[in-house]
Image 1 (cartoon, rainbow, N blue to C red):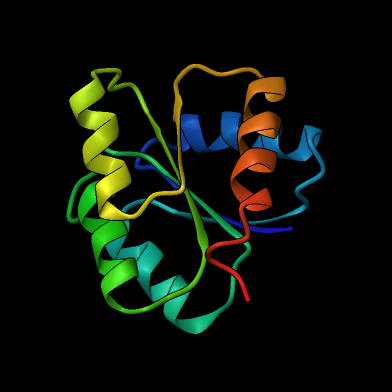
Image 2: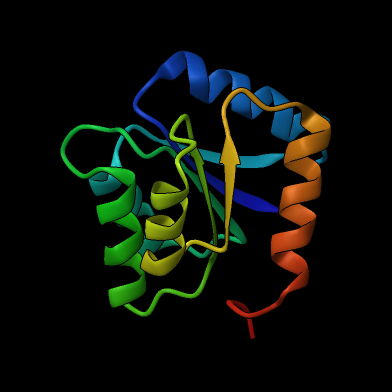
Length: 124
């Protein structure tokens, strides 16, 4: 599974990368913000995007909207600290396939990824 990991915190990216490795994701590309991530998506195909919400330049919500507006087909999971129902709903309406709250366990992330990719709505 090729994963694009988008988070402005190098520490959070390392934590998430370790969790992804534990669940079998070996091809992980990192981006520090939505602008950088969008450039990666325009150059290469990914199976899954994990994106933070709060980032400089282009936040996670703007990033998700830009990806969907560009017609890029990829599963997207918002990984955030925002737990309010309104935030989750806003992310889902923008086009994320799922939402995970930080901090999370490898088991939680694996279950969410399985749930999201099982839908097969973003991939041919």
